[in-house]
Image (tube, rainbow, N blue to C red):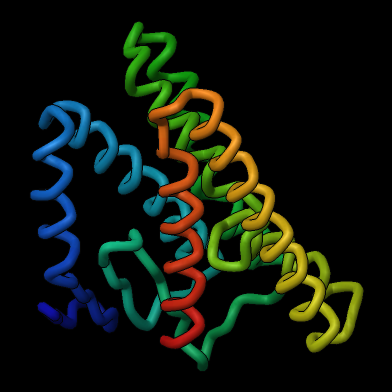
Length: 195
């Protein structure tokens, strides 16, 4: 893991990120991957900008195979309300990206922003939608109850994605994309719990 400390923030780059990009290059054109990476950095900059507007600095930013993750400094944690705003800032910026790309006629970029926004709004604990939902639940329930509710919602959502993935694979006879997404999310959930 390449680690650089700059401005009080520890920046980490996992070797799995460039490895994933190389693997993607085997299947997709460079221009499409560039649009995806640009939309992802646009998305993450929404979270970072929002944190900075709340005068909070992340302790570390890690770019890895499962995307970018910001870890809060334990001395300056966000409130639940602030966390809702920060969690939804990335998808909101993707929404702005959709409007901007459509107005310029960049349809493929608009589709990438739409997919990234929709994906991140899923109510899974490790995604933005799940983080925002957890904060809403924690505002109105004890922490343990909010965590338990969020685990159940995440598992239900994953089971639904698996069901849809198998249905798409069965109906199409060849399209495993949604099923692979469910496997990816399951792995991400497992590895994010063990961090």
